[in-house]
Length: 252
Ligand code: ADP
Ligand code: MG
Ligand code: MG
Image (cartoon, rainbow, N blue to C red; front, side, top):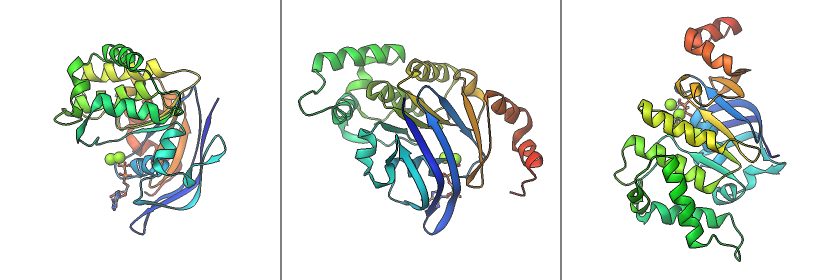
């Protein structure tokens, strides 16, 4: 079992404090969801966990199995088993999707134990079939000219190929039609197990109908204001954030 701990995390962007003391603890074999209004710091949390240089941690800790993540460079975090599916995946010309994934897999393996090409291709074919992706998607430049839905599906392909210990999926469901949503959910559910944990950031209950979270956190104004089970997401869908604000007497 692995454990990812975020303790009293404060993060600023350009001297403006966005996260104001986030506490979160997740284990493998668990799926957590973070819901919250726009602009509350959800993407900031994911960027800080992955080590985006614009996000300055001013206080607090991030620990992966007790190791200090904040001391690691971005590539070290990835090698340690962290994975982020970003809200807006970038297009990278000159490197194919397959080349990218093979390099990412090999970066996590020792020098004398790189993934054999045939094994890689077999795995790629299998995962692309699960995700209902056309074979040619693997040979196209990374995300170049991909539709919004194809980019999101491709993030899940990377997830299934790289097999991180912890994945943060930032609005992986935004802009997806119902078929794509089901495919993405199928991919996440296929990853579930004792070697994998995920943090799903979403605005909507919709995805959580297909991927049932073990824990749901509500983030507002840079902190987690409430944590509960899957029913909390349903309640938010029914009441909006107003119900939580009223219950907790929040003035933001
Ligand atoms: P969420 O993902 O919950 O919608 P974000 O983490 O993206 O929220 O943003 C939180 C706050 O930080 C917002 O007020 C946003 O305007 C601000 N912010 C995000 N990125 C930057 C940036 N690069 N420069 C300045 N402010 C930013
Ligand atoms: Mg947002
Ligand atoms: Mg966001």
